[in-house]
Length: 211
Image (spheres, rainbow, N blue to C red):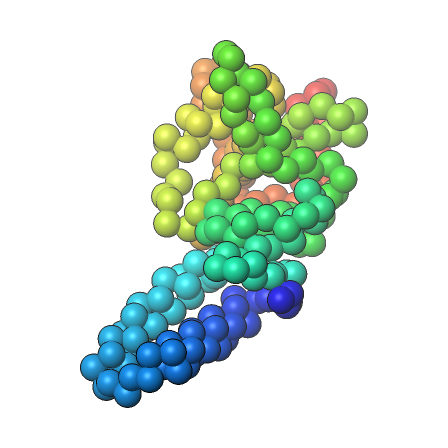
């Protein structure tokens, strides 16, 4: 089954799926027990609260291709050209990249998703990398699930990636909080932009730095 999805649509889909599961359960066991029904309702409410929390982000709302395979939900990744398992972090990644390309003017062709790096013999993966027109990395984009706070530890993680990539900009988000900064490698400090800048502003900043 494939359908278009916003978080509200997914919320309804979850309700319908849960209702179907309950009817199947009732038909199979032929139980008309109010106690069991009450347990089901409570479990459903708890599930809905968790589900709704996953979908609501501090970003504009977009539509996605979603499909269910057995008990798992998958989302179409336009960058990797395939369906990937939908997790809270993946939901943030898909929404944030749409935000960059559709609202901030970032060229989709200059973004690489889930880029593997080899750092000191260890394999690491960047959520996304922005390249310049000369195919040189210029920004690391690190994305977290909404329940993971953006702390110094997250910036330190991106700094490890930067040992290999040597970019001048970091962008970090958990779907609720968003940060974009310029890296000063000489004193290991960051200069933060006000919010997420449009791509044109970022290009202007890069041009001024090169002068």
